[in-house]
Image (cartoon, rainbow, N blue to C red):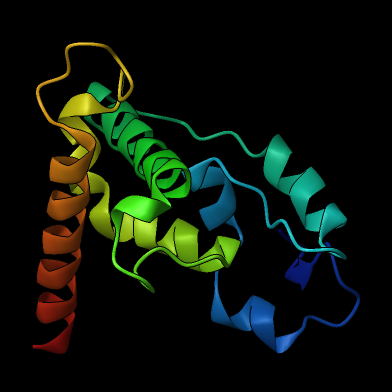
Length: 136
């Protein structure tokens, strides 16, 4: 949302905007959601990603599939794993997208090999590996 080196949403860029990249919402296919974030949501809807190759397209689809699955199946996870905050959910989807790479095109298709509980378990394991890698 930077235009000529300035935030195009706020006259004075808030600390929050310095802490995260709002493209995370568009990447995950979700809106900022909270009241007062309508302008961010409008901008998020306009973002388009370029996928130079099939792998990039597939990975982006996996991020969206991860966010969608976690939002729709939050009850499959232990309390506190799936955040209610849209920004945190989008970041979590990026952390665990690898679980959805092979299923990003049709995560809800009948006959899929994995069950919802198995997917939730794989998400938790992927998050553990991500967090361990960041701690090192």
